[in-house]
Amino acid sequence: MGIFIKNPNVERKARELARLRGTTLTAAVEAAIEAELSRTPKPVARRPTLEDMERATDEFRRKIGLDKAEIVPMTKRDWDALWPVGIPEIDEL
Image (cartoon, rainbow, N blue to C red):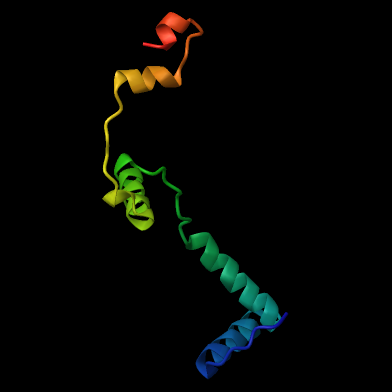
């Protein structure tokens, strides 16, 4: 696969580097890129903060319209109905 260098100044510098090193153009470009990559700090993946997650949640709610939905608090009775214990007297309260 080839790379086409449209900037004549960059091409001249690449050819000069190859000549000074006594290598091919490809080898000179490869060495220069490797050297630059070794000096370039790698990005560190960071864990999202609580603020990041809250911001993402708020954006999601806005995008799907939940920010306009009425929020009705769940009662204890509603919560308990989700988790029956298998005793009819308790489950039917």
